[in-house]
Image (cartoon, rainbow, N blue to C red; front, side, top):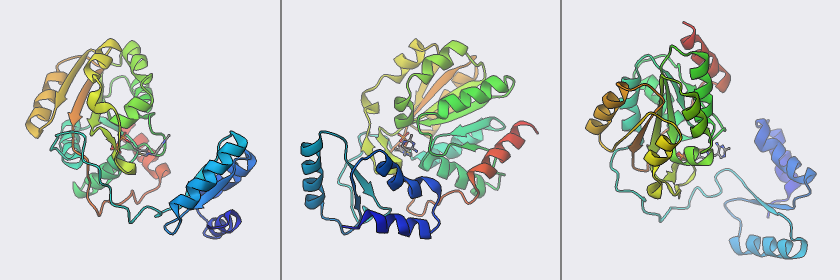
Length: 274
Ligand SMILES: Cc1ncc(C[n+]2csc(CCOP(=O)(O)OP(=O)(O)O)c2C)c(N)n1
């Protein structure tokens, strides 16, 4: 096992950004015992250690997973849905449909794909790419819609994100921003972080959206259905929800935004105020 102190020193020496660097210190402060997990860790040894700690203290313990620790692990999981539309293809269509709208996209691969699609399409970066704040995408988009009531706001969300802060929906439904389109990319998984299943393949988002006060809902699973559903919803005042059933998976060479979150925020603000 790696010694925590050596781990922290290594992170500090590499000058890594804050959260990864301070997590061991936070755990120390909270007096939560932890072990570092890396590619060479023995799962049985770690599990035995955690079990022994839990039995002794009846209090939380932590396993701090080093970047790349699971890189060689191949998931055996089958996709939970029968969908065939890939997220990146759906996003390409959605960016066409969104046109000049303000786009707020959810953390993980969705925002990474939006960033790369803008590059591939030869368009300037102008989207709010939510970083880290999974679950808050819809609330951020709501804030934009309330601040810019004349602009169409397209919130591109994930099923894991929507389920994480479902309470945002009745707030949106009660404030009723008229130009608000809430796109839910539903792959029934936390695809960005390993494909862990959500319950979104068994969740009635139509009932939830309409009961929350959304004015309309439509669902699409193919490019043609997506175009048709968008047109159908465009005729209604918002807020509206468009569920897009997508498959898991993304390009192996998908990169990360090459500009900073601060740059992206300013590009988004400039786009809104142009
Ligand atoms: C508060 C918070 N918790 C966890 C994460 C790490 N994280 C980033 S994307 C993601 C999964 C998102 O799942 P979903 O919304 O279904 O989108 P998908 O990855 O399937 O496209 C997680 C857990 C985060 N960014 N923020």
